Amino acid sequence: MASKCCILGYGAAAKTDSRMYAFNRTAKEIQYGWSDILARVSVIMTSYNKPEYVGKSIESILKQTLTDFELLLMDDNSNKKTKKVIGSYLNDKRIKYYCSNVTSISERAEKIRYAVQINKALSMATGQYISYATDDNIYRPQRLEKMVNTLESNPEIKIVYSGSKVLSLDKNGEVKKTMHRMAKSKTWLAPCTIDHCSIMHRADILPTIYEKWNSYWDEDPQFYFIGDARFFWRLNHFWPFHPINEVLDDNYITKKSLHGQMTCAKKNRLIRLLPEQRTCKELRDYLRNLGGDK
Ligand code: TYD
Ligand code: MG
Image 1 (cartoon, rainbow, N blue to C red):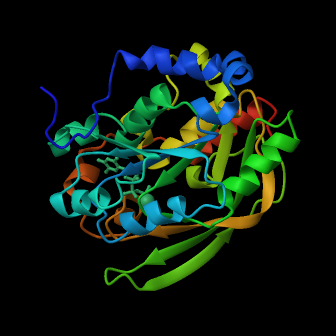
Image 2 (cartoon, helix red, strand yellow; image 1 turned 90 degrees about the horizontal axis):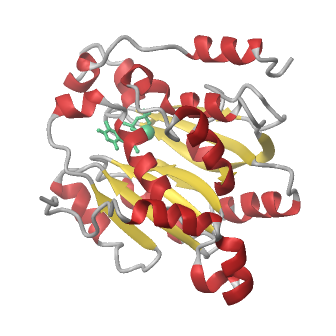
């Protein structure tokens, strides 16, 4: 039975159709004109229990200077407070809201939940370009525009990344530490140096990934802390990441977040249920052996 919180279901039947729709776009584009049928960018936002931040994250996307996007808002069955905040934005027609029906913590530990949600979103996304967001990340206003411009003026580039400001917050929400992730050079060694909120890739690279690994993002919980690095590891088998040397997002690390929990003496139940975690070093060494960034 469908979860009551869902405004739209996952629509299994639409899965193949929407992907095919996306990849058959050229003919449709010629026939109807691009903007009539598809969004230019699919922004995929994952969300779980961040009522204090999720509204700001959504607003930062709705206020982008590039307006031709769809926002696939993938909520992982958050608490009422979070759903209420999200609900207040759903009158914007560009938002497509999906909600899972996961309830138990043990279920959350079985697979990387954000990877599961992103994979569902990717199967439904219709944009020419894919961009990722989280419920505690703020896009700067020109983020989508600058990334799309770079991809449109460089047809050979498949993936771009930008600089990012990382702010670590204490339990009262005060900024305790900041650092900048830079975006200076083309890299075949993206894992653990770039966050997924700082990249955009062409949608048409996805079938290559699916063909090799039978999924887009790896849902294996051994990579729970570095799920984006694991996805970048897959991407770096085929393509480098190209830099846009400018900070285009602000990334908040809260005490409640997965990485915030790493520094807490008492770990929450989800973290305690996870299997032993695989490492950045392993992913990066593997890519170095493939010849990455030599
Ligand atoms: P987050 O707690 O922000 O971790 P990090 O320290 O890596 O930033 O979680 C990352 C994303 O995963 C966030 O958008 C929420 C999502 N998420 C789910 O969708 N389901 C879950 O059960 C959890 C724990 C997170
Ligand atoms: Mg986070």
